[in-house]
Amino acid sequence: MRRPPPRPSPRSDPLQLIYSPLSPFARKVRVVLAEKGMEDRVEMVAANPWEDPESLTRANPISQVPTLILDDGSALHDSPIICAWLDAHGDGQRLIPDGEAQWAVRRLEAVCDAIMETGVKLRQEEMRPEGERSSTHPVRWARTIRRAFDDLEAEGPGGDLNLGEIALVCALEYIDFRAPYLNWREGRPNLVARHGALASRPSLRATAPA
Ligand SMILES: N[C@@H](CCC(=O)N[C@@H](CS)C(=O)NCC(=O)O)C(=O)O
Image 1 (tube, rainbow, N blue to C red):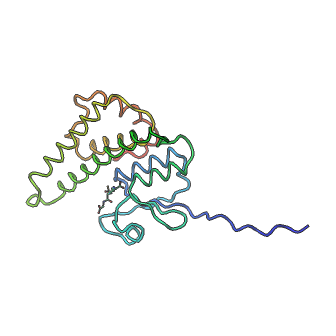
Image 2: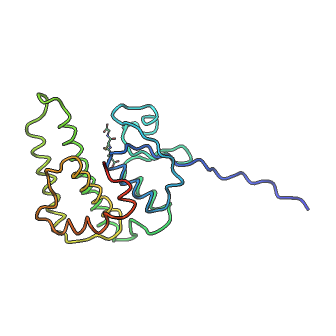
C-alpha cells in the first residue's frame, strides 16, 4: 500500500510580543495572553520603544510597544487590536463578548487606555528637565484623569472578567505606580470594589508594575 505523501508541516514559528516591562498597554496584552492560555505560544522580546530599535520599527513604524508579530511575519500594533486578535485565537472565556454587549466592554477599554495615555504623558512631562516642563499641561492632564475616575465611579461596582475590566485594573495600577498623588481610591468605593474584584487574579499579579 502506498503511503500518502507527507503533508507540509504547519507553520510553527512562535508569535513574538515586543513589549517593555512597565508599559501598561503591554501589560494589558500580557494579562490577556495569560487569561487565554497562550503564554507558551509567544516569545517575549523586551525593547525600549523610545530608542526606536530596528527590531521594533521594522514591525511597527510608530515604534510603540506592544507589537505582536504573527507567525506569517505580519505585525499587529495597538493594544486593543492585539487583545482582540488574542481573544479570537486563544482558548477559554471570551474577553470581548459577541453582539451588542461588546460595545460597553470596548468603550470601557477605550476610556482606560485614555487614562493610561494621559498618565504616560504626565510621566514624560515629569521626566523633562525642570526648566522645560509645562506649567499648564500636567494640571489639565491630572484633571482629565480625575474626571475619568469620577465617571467610572458613577458606573457602579462592575468587576466581571472582560477586556474592559482588565484595562481598568491596568490603568488604576499604572496611576498608583506613576502618579499615586491622584489617589483614585479616595471617595470612590465603586472603583475600589471594581479593582478588588479582579486585581488578585494570577494574570494581574504576575504582571503588576514594580
Ligand atoms: N495606543 C497604543 C499606545 C502604546 C504606547 O503608547 N506605548 C508606549 C509605551 S507605554 C510607547 O511605546 N511609547 C513610545 C513612543 O510613543 O514613542 C496601544 O494601545 O498600544
